[in-house]
Image (cartoon, rainbow over all chains, first blue to last red; front, side, top):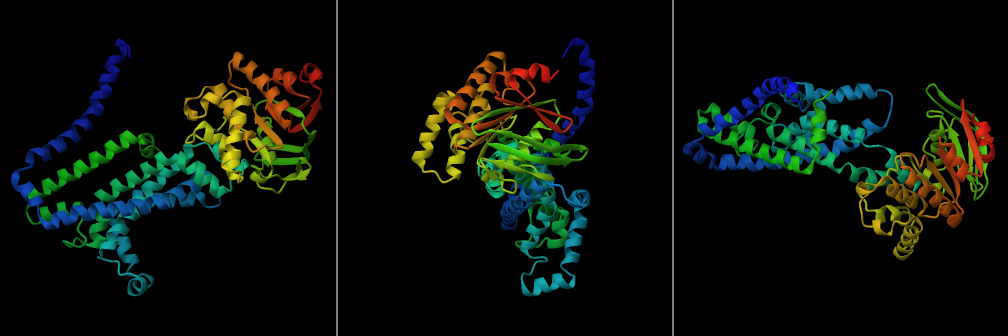
Length: 267
Length: 222
């Protein structure tokens, strides 16, 4: 950077820096609002249930999302077929729709006759703990698919082709060469899906309700605590969620798939 | 031998029209042509990585036109080498033998033999990411040769090498040819490589291939 460039970079820094300051102020506001009563409020069985339930459901939904995202991302990146553009657009629906609408749609889906039949004879879903995983998965999987498509788009198909000439079947080439080389992308897809699931509120509230010691997750805890006037406990839970989010971001930074995450927000 | 009969490949506006040529068993053919002329397409078609519209491909006397890439008995070195980045050099070399059911001892012996031939003994436990261009090229060559293929396909194997490394690789390719007697098709746009290595030169232009003798190369390509 030359001396003549400095005003330009200062201008950029001021414009962009305002947002960074806003994020820090949001966290700091919570920190200063935190008091002993909030920390004590955190120590209730209901909230600890929500902590563990959030961790378990987010992990399960992220695992499911990754299991769907790897094959779908690969197919979308490496093949051409009629209707591909349409499917690409369909995959963006959970990203652009308000999450609350996803929850409402899930609720309606499970009240149609096939949905009711499924609930009667296979598994009761609506307002049950399993519905939390389904609600989180419905949104998070779309983000995971995007991450995996970017990963496979960035990888040259050459090593896979060489593996084929050396004697691999297509499945062997995928499992022995492509997947190991895509491991950072897989990790990024998992982390993005996990973070998204962990913070999901709208679809969980609509599709699962927020029943204490049953379907309550941390994001709905904040809402419930606020609704009964316990601001201190809501602040404590919010800060706990910030700490978890920071931990995930730090792990991502160490593992290096930040490039995949960065490209997800670019067209 | 490598034998192409009336090979036609269409891809959008690009077309290879009824390409035919032979490279005899143990021969070293160099396919030349301008960038975008379809040299890599021919290699991919031979390797089974691209569908043909028409034509027949025979390798070592067998019609392999409908065979999967792994059943054609060939080794392929793409232009970007495409080494397996999550495996060590040793694992790259052992990849094809282990896939084809060689025993551990047979695989280890083959890796040792190739590492001596290619001068990469000191690289065996390194990861591909840290290799120089010349080293990576030797490893890619070794990986392609590991399962003793009868056919070797090289896509611009000496591009992006400095002059000294280029000279060394020319000598090495000659040595590999003498040691393995593998029938080779080498794609390049550098006449010098054809003059030094080829006993059959093929020139690809306007979607068709014509043959030229290495000694006539200067006149033919003018």
